[in-house]
Amino acid sequence: MIACRSFTPFRPGGGLATNARSSISGLNGYSSQQTRSFFDSLLNSTLGSCPLRSLTHTKRLPYPPALIFKAVSDVSGYPSFLPFTISSHVTSRDAAGYPTRAKLKVGYAKFGLEEDWDSVVSCDPGKGLVEARSSDENSNGLFEVLNTKWHIAPMDPASKDGTSVKLNVDVKFRNPIYDQMFSQVEGKVASTMISAFEKRVEELHRKEGK
Image: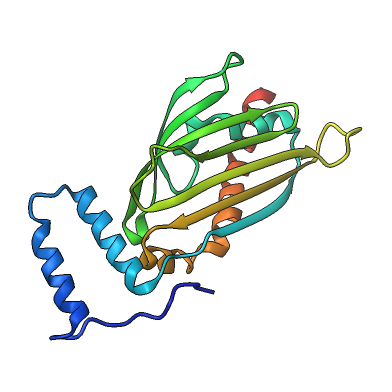
């Protein structure tokens, strides 16, 4: 369900259209980022700001938690197997070698969406948690919020195999039109991501078994 207000179309001669044309005429000389920010603000003023969408998916995987944690915490390897991730560069790590900051290019090719995104990453192998949240550097762009949280836990503490994997994704677009497009696929995003990690873990499991 879209939480944006109904759209009031621009009408020739209308005050809104006149103001928009006047504002657009003053955009010459601005960067594409500044221009996009302007249009996002213009759309928000007419359509209304968009909601924070929270996506959740849980799945049981027949692999040990440590192997799944290894795949999820390998942020630099995401582009090789994870949908919506075009590139990833870890810019800082903690003493244990886990990423603490990363720059990712994320997007959805079907809709022509692409965004460079700076994330603050937290990895806690003891609790089976991997979190990536928006940094303060993301003041402009497609997303106002883009956070992920993985919780990896054994189904039975006494068992070596069988792991519950839960993924939470919080996303909020600045542009209501992008939000509306995303709503068409939001039900599949979290499950698609977990399925991609499942294939990656299966690959790692085969390699370690050799």
